[in-house]
Image 1: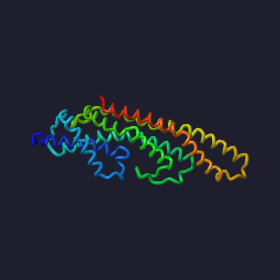
Image 2: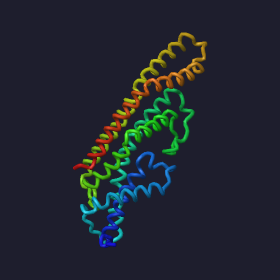
Image 3: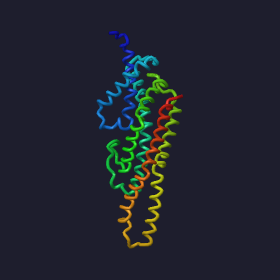
Image 4: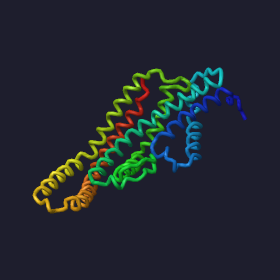
Length: 258
C-alpha cells in the first residue's frame, strides 16, 4: 500500500478542511440543532472532507511553523464555514420573525414557549413558519446547494489562504441583513393587512357598543382569523420561501468572490 501521500502537511490540510466544514455544520439551521448527535456532525464533516480532500488539497500552500500559527489558520477556516452557515441562518431568522409578528397580531404572546432550535422564547406561529421553512429547505435540496457552496469556497479561498477582502464581505453581509425585513414583510403582508382591518372594525364596534366585552370577543376571533388567513395564503408562502431560497443559493455561490 502506497502511503507516500500520508505526510504531516497533508494531515494538517485535511484537518483544516474538516474544520471549515465543521464550522458550516455548527451554524447552519437543523444541522446545528442540539438534537442532532455530535457523532453525526463529526461523521458528516469527516466524510465530506475525505471526498473533497483529493480534489482541493493540491491548490493549497501550507507553511506553518508552530502550534499558534496552526490555531490561527484553523480559526480562519472555521470562520469561513461559519459564515456560510450564518448566511443561511439569516434567512431562517427572517422567516421566524415573520411568524412572530403574526403570533403577536393573533394575541398569542402569552403562549410563547422555548424554541427547541434556538432555546429562546418564540411565538407559536414563528415555530410553525420555521418548521415549514425547514421542510422546504430539504424539499428544494438547498442542503445540496450548501455542499456546492463549500466546494466553491475551496476554489475561491484555498486552504490556509485566509480571507483577504473583509470590506467586501462586510458589505454583502449588511445587504443580506437588510433582506431579513424584506423576507418578513413579503411573507406576512397579506395576513397583517387583513388583521389590521379587523382591528379597526373591532375598535369601531367597541365605540358603538361599549357595553360589549370586546376583549373576550376579539381574542378568539383574531386567533381564528389568523389561522384561516395562514391556511389560505399557504401556497403563496411556500412560493415566497422558494424564491427566497433561490436567492440564498445565489448568495452562497458568489459570497466569497473578490
